[in-house]
Every structure is written in structure tokens, then in C-alpha cells.
Amino acid sequence: MSKALVEKILRAREQRVEVGGRAYTIRRPTDADALALRDSTALEVVSRHVVGWSVREADLVPGGSDAEVPFSAEVWAAWLPDQPDLWEPLATAIFDAYAAHVKAREDAAKN
Image 1 (cartoon, one colour):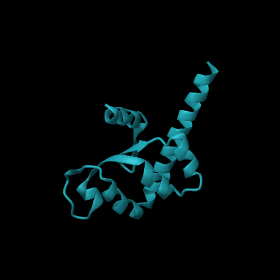
Image 2: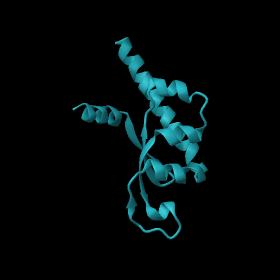
Image 3: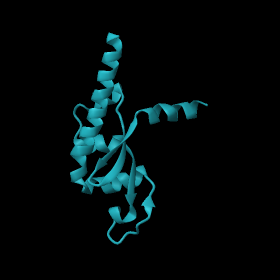
Image 4: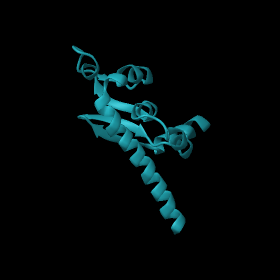
């Protein structure tokens, strides 16, 4: 039961974003994460808070197939450092998701 509940908690912080013609699943940082991210680079933020994607093998390697590639943190970590065009837009989406969370919490406290 607790594992299923943890999965629900994590999924509640996720959303899909489109960048560069591909879909990525980002996970909003927690308040504790946000503190740790204050001095992080965009690459570090994106490395930690992208948890899914919709990409083909051909998107990842020249000559790759059109087969969809399941998300893997290991593959993400190997591929991402050579994709600087993704860092800022994905980091911005992650920080925007956190800002929206903070605003929603503040708005709820006012009511």
C-alpha cells in the first residue's frame, strides 16, 4: 500500500511539456528540492526533474529506429549533456511548475 501511495504522490507532481517537438514529463520540485536547486545550473535541474519522455531511438542516436524508447534515468543522463537546447526550456517549465504550486498554496491559505 505505501509504495502505491508514494507513486500517487509523485505522479501528482508530474506534468507533460513539449520542447523541441518532443514531449517530456517533468516532476515539480518539492519545497526541500527548491532550496537545494537555488544554486543549480539548468542542466542539473533538468537532470533531476525530468522523469519521462516520448522519444524514438532515432531521436537519440543517428541511424536509430522509429521505435519508442522507454524512459531510463541512465539513458537520460548519457544523452542530456549533449542537448543544451533543452536545458533552459525544461528548467523554466520545472521552475514554473514550482511557482504555480506555491501560488496555489498561498491562494488556498487566503480562503
